[in-house]
Image 1 (cartoon, rainbow, N blue to C red):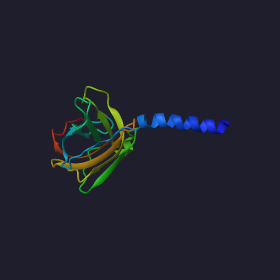
Image 2 (image 1 turned 180 degrees about the vertical axis):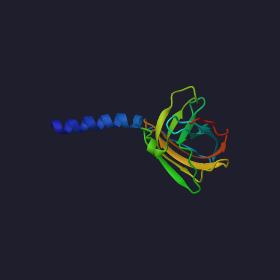
Image 3 (image 1 turned 120 degrees about the vertical axis):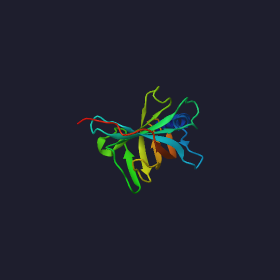
Image 4 (image 1 turned 30 degrees about the vertical axis):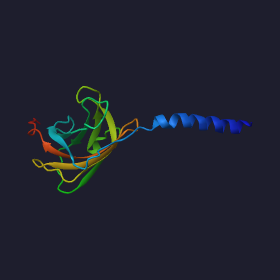
Length: 158
């Protein structure tokens, strides 16, 4: 057997062993009804104001209190549909960041990449949106949500 054939055989065998374990199932919402979420006024130290959207992901097995957290910086309002794209770095120019926590506020957040699309975002009105995110391990999260306001604007001093 030639070295080239042996190398191809070894690579093929290695791929056959590795690929099934590299594929991570996604977490897609099966029910078309939007998930009930909460949007809170928050604060970001670099621009004074922000929103935090907490989306419970109750369909995840093995996680005691799983949540997707979407942080929107700068207190924007959108009257029309708008999408925001998030990268792993959470660049302030992107307008926010998304993360996953298996246990809300009791586990380290995992930064997600992907897109969130808002139907509209207006203070005092329900916020409808959809997201599709991917974690660093390849796990996907896809769902729609309806967020109601959970608090009042935070006072801040300039």
